[in-house]
Image (cartoon, rainbow, N blue to C red; front, side, top):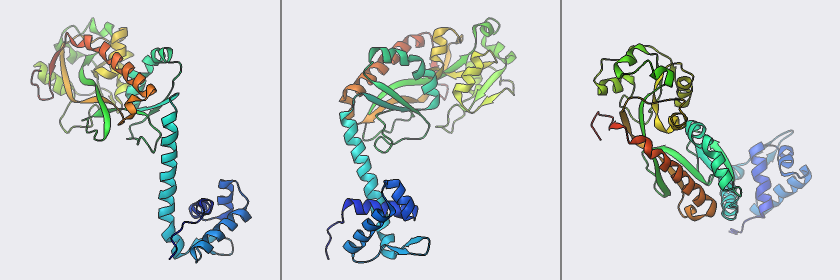
Length: 314
């Protein structure tokens, strides 16, 4: 049996025709005439020694041989495409594609982007703000900033932000809510804060650790933590906010965190890239810059009293 492969153009024609189940649509995709595509399919069938399509009146269907060929051709072209993209990215240091969650992108990265762009005009930043866990090779991603436990086997991983929460409100509200017990008189904003752990982490947790009675029931609930922060900035109420997402508002004075008790979360943000890529100039520049920005955040923690999610002092 001759195991020599047919020409790549014939395999490409078969791949397109099998996906569309139409020679004319496949020809449009490949920007060739239907006759040229049909010639490539026929060349492949001659090379194989049997047909891969049944030609019907106004349609085509795969033969058993064609069905056997489809999975390998699909995966082969996917692998070739991924390898080609990876090879091209190795030589391209002018574009840096970063993926991060929508909240950390809008609340932490976006307010700082002007500084990085000013320091590195030679690098074009592109962001993919999504909670979907993206693949570095398949999705053409250079850097990921992820929040979670940090099981990052096979990747270059640098710890960034250890997350914590505490009550946050506008300065006007803080002038009225001067002690923790007065939080019971405020509108408390709720958020789906912590999907990574089964343990409860809500206003009731903070009230209990502070030694207060249970908080009042009710109040608006937000599925996105950054939306809850926006509501707090607007003066709608008080949020038990995540420091990473509220840091810009705290630094600019839009929000204040008047009470020292803060709950440290066991998960953290990490800077991730493929191993070996951390030395590429544009990736290394971005990592250095991110770490500098994280370093500026440390001073805000000096006046905090931290406990873990079980209420143990840290």
